[in-house]
Image 1 (cartoon, rainbow, N blue to C red):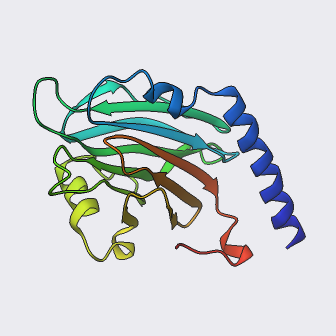
Image 2: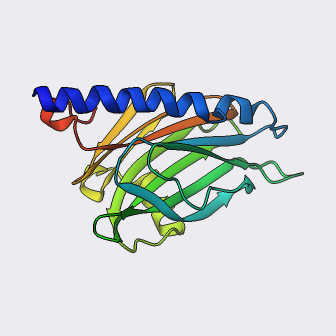
Length: 206
């Protein structure tokens, strides 16, 4: 328990340092003029994993600021998706990164991030999801539909919630993925990728 707590404290300190060095999602969002957008801030709090090979599938909208090609350990990167210009659409899609484990010199799983910022709030709400899939999972319409519609979430390797500022948490075999999202039309989503340490401390997915 002591070793686990020590690891957690050290990683929390690393997270503070990361936040101080990186341009925040709030700063990026302030420069976005679109009426619907998703600014996604991804923080890699792990020591041995790199996020590589980003892929994007958009149901609605377009890429404004593309994902960083690599999110190295102890780094934060931000990407932005917006509604299509001149169209009454939202910003809706899915983003994936391969999880490259440096000691194995290979990627072992795929991180998936789903976001849905609708145009019409009379009919829809903001929804978001995070999960970990087997190596080689395609980033496509099928993945988006699964993460948006599938009711048996954990059986399929992800968690999903309506966005209200509260956190969601998916614990995989090796990593712990945490995320929050606000319910606004110009929405900010924050994702953290942690080494799997919380489970042994008695903390599980919400």
